[in-house]
Length: 348
Image (cartoon, rainbow, N blue to C red; front, side, top):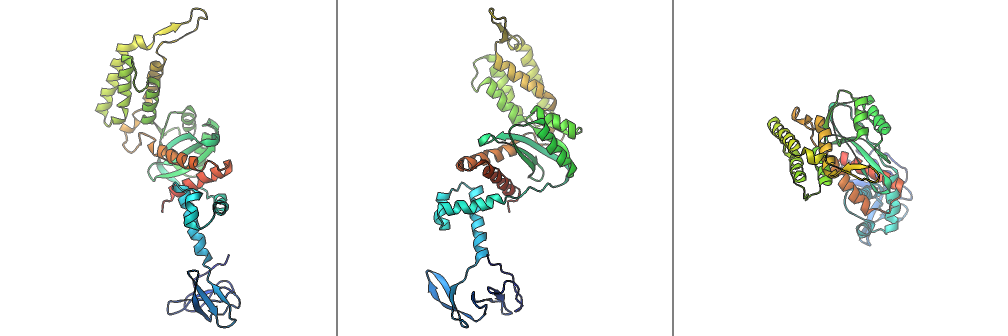
């Protein structure tokens, strides 16, 4: 591949046999591929391309702007990563076969960049994980203030040891966490308590709301379940301390009214085993009760995000793109994720 360098006022730099000169009249002067002479003139158009002829050696040639060609192809690679584009739709636009595009994009994928951690104080960190195809669990550490993924990990599960190592690395690199918003996974809470013991914890309201609906179903028949579902759906609308107090009082009144239904048990007389008769109702209330200490931290500081919705959008779009390119191998998918996060961090 030939490299070109800007040349000012007739002083040339670059390769010996293939040069492009910038003269004092602000015109680009091309050189001959064969002898390097600058006595080059235009010599008609062939196949809709400008042809040139060297006066010194008589060679006729087409000018190859290789670096521009590579830049344009990388632009298609960006669209392949960020847009819903496949080889079949790119083939006609790039004027290349699908196999050629695949070979080219494999080169780009192999050169995936690393994410640079930005040291910062008072960081409002979002931590969440999601399971992708091929059994990959993608864990993101997202700075809510600067809209930047500080760190990521592809693992099999959300394990304490790995999350602890990631948070430790962030702390060493100068990221001072003020608050952490997460889904309440035990591994995340334990790791945050070890590395950032003074960090404020905020449970994601959407996770609590969504999981409660999963336990109760969207159309429960039991009256207690209907009322608890209605209370859980109101979580994301609480913006002030007064609204919070009213909600907590409503939950307390609900518990006093339906306590017998909540703790009702059924027993198998043959085995002696027992279970909660309304298991989904009990699970939903237990979820809300255990999340209570970290449910309304954001009311004391409005800069603390109350949900991890920004990460949910990352996961949703990334899953859709990986599903579109389901033929990628595991290592290629890891590199695809790196490029995706790189472009999301640097949209310009």
